[in-house]
Image 1 (cartoon, rainbow, N blue to C red):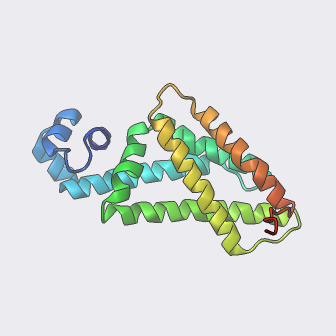
Image 2 (image 1 turned 90 degrees about the vertical axis):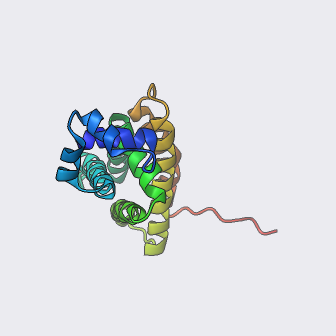
Length: 194
C-alpha cells in the first residue's frame, strides 16, 4: 500500500493524488486504505517516514567509523545515491513533495538535520585524525554545504534514470574531497587584499 502511495504521490503531487488512485494502484479498496493508514495526510506522513528511514539506513549501512574519512564519505555518498537510484519515487516524495508542505516539511527538516549531524561528526573525526582543529560552526556549515550539493545532484539523478548512482557519487566525491583534503591539512583559501 505504501509503495502504491509513494508512486502516486511522486507522479501527481500531494494535492492532485487521490485516495481512489492510490487504492487502485495498490489493488485494494479505498475503505481499506483509510482503515490501514487513515487520512491522506496520515498516508503521506507514513510515506515520508518510511522513505526517510530507508534513506538513512542506506547511508548508515555503508559507513563504518573505523575507516579513513575519505572512505567514509565515499561510502556514505554511495549509500545516498544508491537510495535515490533505487527509490526515485521515494526521493520525489521526500525532496520534491514534502519539502514545501507543512507539517511534512518539519519532518524532512529533522531528517536533514540528522544527516548533517552525521556528516559533521565524520568531519570532526577526520580533522582530529589529522591533528588539526576546526570550529564546530565550520564543520556544521561544511556538512550543510555537502548535503545541499548531494541533494542537487540527487535531483539530477532522479530525472535521469539512465545515470549510474555510483558515478554520481564519484562526481560529488571528486568535487568535494579534493578541497576537503586540503582543509583537513589546515590549508585555507584567503582573499587577496584589494
